Image 1 (cartoon, rainbow, N blue to C red):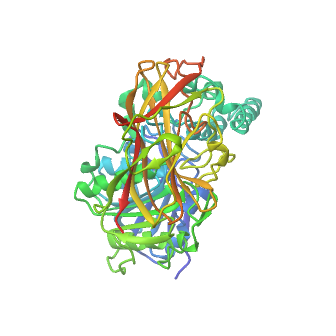
Image 2 (cartoon, helix red, strand yellow):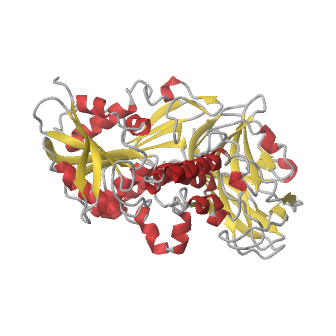
Length: 557
């Protein structure tokens, strides 16, 4: 093949005159070629961009590749506002890319996280040349994993993301003021390095002091509370039927946007669109085979995919059929490809969720038991005190935080030894038990305050007694009647795992997971202004009238 041609910082004028710049990679020869477009705010030549879409590899496979800095970022003009312009800029950029010399007029989009969402926003704006999208590890409803979860602020991602994005913003702001730039960057770095210490704990969480100190555009939580209509700028939920495109969606069981990926897939299938889904055991930034404390086997690695070849190869094959010459071989995957943890195997399915799953209740019982049988007599409620100034520390999970907080399945010994964490455990399982689908906990609970949080975490306890987290969730109670029991449903999102024979299923119940989620200060004050905390006395009930339980989607043997 002739040498690949690369043009750097190619200008594209948006409808308001703002110029965005992209690097364009063309295969050798005269074309025409289908176009793969990625629009991201992290720098089009940064390793993150290349990791998601290797432009040289794609060009060698016959694609023209366009990597663009979004508005207000790096080489592109304009003011940096997360989300605001991605729909209109996406539309204009797709049309521009389709008309580039060498293009065959068909554009596909690819990328993950923020630049997974730029695909959805472009698709919703309906540029006629956009033929397919492949969003990875991205959300559907921003108030279910991006800005908030169950009503609690996703502080773990909001704080480091906003500060990280601030470096380029400060460099632009102080472009002609070297002293101001040095001072600004120095303070920013100090706040970034200090997050895992005292930084995350600054109050109020809903108007985070570090953002105000540097005057930075934050991830979007604060603005979405001030301007609810603006939240539509990155919301996909409820709009899938407006998109008539095939999608190739990729997620991970320990990704911060696990449920968003699944929700986007199911909504597109419900709308009658062609949709492919791949779910690995991965986290947001790790698509290899060792996640947290667990080695899931080399088959789990996205470079291998259980002898199916590299994941990006499956994507390129799919794009060749949707925007290319249509002559590529079918990839060796089903419509749905799931990695089932525990047995550590890929499995092809034709649907999600699995219709053969049976919702099965496991009930919280006295003495820390978790049983299929509900309580038949009154059992004394469990009690604990929740102190927001001494919250349960984030230990693993589907998260994206500073490097001090590891992602994935981790040993829960220290967490479960705390007095403010209740633990309920089954007897050792007589046979393998597969849980694949959406997990929910129903808690009958009371607090002595007017507001609090409830956190539930599903764990797998091995034969040696080591407990590791599988999935979890939170629900924020904003208006509680002190001392009065009520039913609360905690959405733990979805998973796929086989609890092996001899293992035990465990449920943790507590009131915090900090700093993944901000702390409820138990006062009922708005997060935007609350700075004073109180200790709350919590109760969990499990009796015939109030059967607290976790519901697991069990796959029949």
